[in-house]
Each structure stands twice: as structure tokens, then as C-alpha cells.
Image (tube, rainbow, N blue to C red; front, side, top):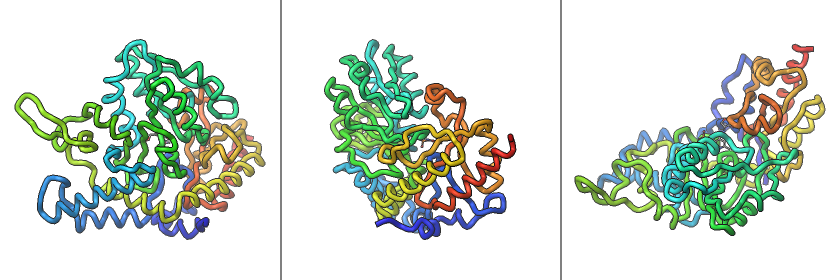
Length: 407
Ligand code: 7TS
């Protein structure tokens, strides 16, 4: 049931452009993905035929805009196995979704002496909000260690999840190591002590099929722009009963039910968390991205990326690269961090750019993880539906050239 990536590639206008006069080899999808025509055309259609503000007017055009916006919400719910669209809050992306929890649920539920547990492999957007919360509340932030294989030390879970733990926030897939984390096992341990679980699915949502009920997530965050959708849109999933209890985030229009001069009551969920005019076209575009991925089939997406990752790992090992993270394909996705002896990743990235190859170099917004790995930076290639084995070959040739520069 797999698809042909060279056919998929044709859906993406960007691949009609060149990079440095060469075929564009885009290997930075963990950073942001490219956008298919189906999504771009859906956004255009919204502005051309449906554009009005949502939920506020009774005229037909506003009804059309509202239907498009709420249709996207239903698609985003279906995509992660949420039975109810009421659980889906539209945000600007994963970072904002995590910060919503910091400013709402966490402020009400995390006190001095409590603990928030994250892991050693988190992106800064699932680290800094909790550092700030800890600073404000006197709570303690703890980090579940990883082993040398780039996987979570589940054997230490008992020491790290205690009766003081109020929140466990972890990524489903690492943006550096590609590790797919056993979220359900962590969630079971967290729930056993009454803690809540927030899943950062920024890297998982574009690449893996998962279900919030199977994960037993209380909250889950993902971004549109990494999964073929536009920037400026994302999702915060929350269990309905938790969203109901939580105070609002931003105050303003749309999030209220009734307002007096000195007080107000709140709208029903999810609107209680969507103050002001939302990013309408972006949300609609995100819905179109979900439909695009559903048409390809998330199992086929995963299968394609496993094949490509296997090939890339083999070829990188063949040129003597150090690869960070597990080699076990069942435990990892298509984000491959690596280094070559004697070549700084930034130099490598600059040199491969001359061959039309886009890779990321640096700390990947995960500085504590870099310290744990004992490196200041890595190069990182990340794969998606439009990448081919030819892209990997171009990457390897280009990386080999960078070796030559420093020989
Ligand atoms: N969490 C993870 C695991 C991520 O990989 C990222 C972005 C974020 C959160 C933040 O998402 P945003 O959409 O709110 O920005 N990761 C990366 C990356 O790996 N390279 O650039 C951005």
C-alpha cells in the first residue's frame, strides 16, 4: 500500500524550483515541511469563496467560513483519534499549545514542592515553559534520563514519578534522535500517582499514526507546518473534562458567554481558549493537510520513511559517520542526526548546500540533549513523503565532499 515518492513530489510546487542551480534536495522536514498544491489551493479557495469571520454573523458567507473552520477541527480530531472535536483547541502551534497548559492547567494545579517531569531529549519548547513555571511556583523540574542507545530509561521511572509528580510532559518522537517514546508506559506510571500527561506530538503527528486514547494522553500538542500545512496553526488536544475545569488563556472576544462591566463568564470549550479572530485560513489549510495525509495513508507514510531511514543509516555508516540514536527502525522515525570526524556540522551544512541539499546543523533547540550526547552540535537530515533514495545518494555524495575540504 505504499506510494511512489516521485509521484508525491509532483504535488509540491517547491520542487519545481532549484537550489544553487541544482535539484532541490530538501532534508529538513523536521524543521518545517513543504506544502502540497492541495493545501495551497484549499487556502486560496477559502479566501476566494468563503472568507468572513467565524461564529459571529448569521449571513451565508459567515456560515460557510464557520463550516470550513469547524470542518478542519473535525479533521484534526479524527487524525489523532479524538472522539470529540470539543477536545481540539486551535493554537498557533506546538509551542503555544504547551504554553496554554503552562498558563492554565499548570498554574491551577502545580504548587511549591510539586514536581514536573520531562525527559532529557525534549525540545526547548517542552522545557523552557516548565523552567518558567518552576521558577514561578517553587515546583521542581525533573528530567528522565536517556540511555546511550537514545532511548528513555524506563527502568528509572519509579524513581522519577513520585507522589509529588503533577505533570509528565514528553515527546512522542524526538526531533534529534528520532526515538519513538513508549508514551503509554509512561502515562500508566503517571496516572498511577494521579499526575497528568502532556504529549508533544510535533514530530510524531506528521509521520506516525497514533490515537490519543491508546496513548492515554490528557493533553497533546502538534503543529500544522510540520505536516504539510501552513504556519500559524496547531492543535492542543485536551480531555473534555480537563478543558472544562481549566481557566481561560487569553481574554477577549469569542471566549466569553456573558460580559458585565466588572466580570464575565466563559464560552463553552474549545472556544473558551480561542480569544479573538483565529487564524482561519491556516486552520482550514491544516484540515486540508490532514486530508492529504489521510489520502496517502499514515501507515504508508511510516513504511516509506522506514525504508528511507534504513537506507540513509546504512549509507551514513558506510562513510564512517557517527549516528546518534537507535538503529532499531521499529523504535525510531526518519530524523537522523550525525557527525563526521573533523568536520563541523555547520561547515558540512554550508558545503552540502552548494549541492542543493538542505540539512539542519546545530543544537536543534535541544541543548541539554546535546550536552548529554557530549557534542556541541550535530548535522541532521530528516525525511518526509517527498524524499527518495536519490535524495539520500545526493546527500551522501555531498557529505563526502565536505570530508575532502578538511582532509
Ligand atoms: N516539539 C518538538 C519535538 C519539535 O521538534 C518542535 C520543533 C517543537 C516542539 C516546536 O514546534 P513549533 O511548531 O511550535 O515551532 N522542532 C524543530 C526542529 O527540530 N527544527 O526546527 C524546529
